[in-house]
Every structure is written in structure tokens, then in C-alpha cells.
Length: 85
Image (tube, rainbow, N blue to C red; front, top):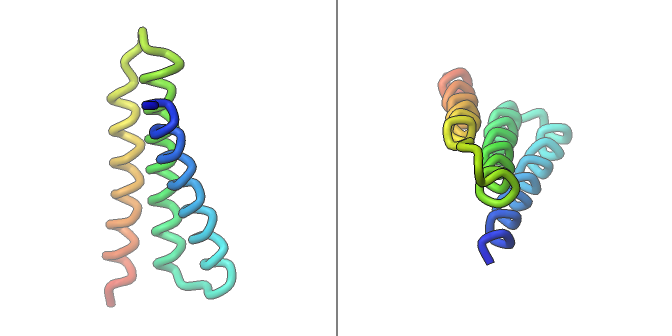
């Protein structure tokens, strides 16, 4: 059950990133671009969660997971500050 939930979370983040990149391509709204980059980071974090919990349980990937999520959120924060005129 956990494998399915972790995988669905990763796929949902990936779908959000793809949809936001498509939106950016059509509208050129830069906030969509920064949001898409954030979701790429969150997708990476979720993929690392699947690897950490299911594929490589002997290794601790928690630092890498948190770093990926933190990087994604930093990109969104940077985009919000940069675009906040």
C-alpha cells in the first residue's frame, strides 16, 4: 500500500510540473515557470522517497530527499520575490 501511495505522490507532482510548463509555454507567465521548477524539485523528492523506502532500504536518503524539496521551495520563493513588483 505504501508503494502505491508514494508512487502516486510522485506522479501527481510530475503531472503538476508538466502542466505548469505547458501553461508557461502558452502564456509566458513567469510565475508558472517558477512553480513548475518547484514541482520538479518536489517530484525529485518523491522519487527519492520511493528509492529510500522501497528500493534501497539499507541506505538513508533522507538528506537528499529534504535537499531536493528545499531546493524546489527555494526556487518558488525566489520566483515569488523576483516577480513581486
